[in-house]
Amino acid sequence: MKILRFNDERVGVLVDGKGVVDVSEAISYREEKGPQRVMQQVIEEWDATFRAQFESLAASGDGVPLESVTLLNPIPQPRKVLAAFANYLDTPERKPDDIPLEFFYKSPETVGPGGEVHLLDIAPVYVFQPEAEIAFVIGNHAKNVSIENAYDHIFGYCPFVDISARGMTRRTQFLPKGQDTFALVGPWITTRDEVGDPHTLNVKSWVNGGARQDYSTSAMARKIPEQLSWASRFLQLQGGDIITTGTYHVGLGPINDGDVFEIEIEKLGRTSWTIKSDGPRKDPEFRPGVTQIPNATPGFSRVD
Image (cartoon, rainbow, N blue to C red):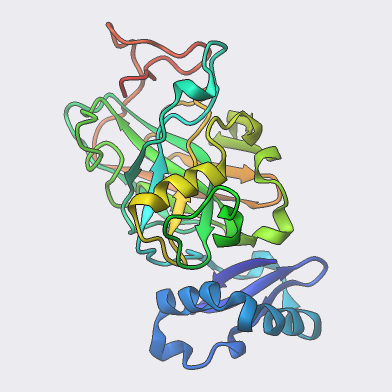
């Protein structure tokens, strides 16, 4: 099932042949709880309560065309957003064992479909790059989860964009990756049962209609169960938390003021964001002394 938020904080499902069906009536005291608590409740009580109610309303209710609604961020303000470092076999010499399990925090001030990315003019930054990724949404409390039981703690999946400011030190990810509007989520959450194996999906991105990334999640080095199991050793994960799985770096390129960035992931949907910058255009340049990734836009490196 594809679960979305739209218009004036309504909750809906996207149904083939019907469009968007409003299922808000299934959620008691929706206005009093606020949008984030509503989505946490839907996620955490999905199997016990909401799956059956949403399925019933989706079958009996009338829908409206997707193009006629304004989509909102599917998870308005997650408690945690974790992002994996360099988790793809995007060069011939890379092997899974070469890639350590590492995560960094993204800002929970995520931006939903159709929103705006704001690029600040920071002197060391020589290029801003969007990284198209698949993210998974935690379904219930997860602590010290085994790899074998990891999928039991996943609610669903969604497209995610990790904005990176290249040129900042990696000592802290606050400026290069953790700024507001640097975590993009949408257009909706697709529940786990509808996706099947998340490691067989095609990921694509475009800037102003020009193709950028085009890769398969089969090239993921550390698979999703291993990522979840490892992260849950150190953190209490809760329903609605987001973990994004890294990107395939071939095809990365710059974004600048006025650009439109689009992402599409097989089975998970397609959406876009606009770019706003308060400084001059920044384009990639060769950075001496670091390893460049073959076939990637010049300027991307392991160090960044």
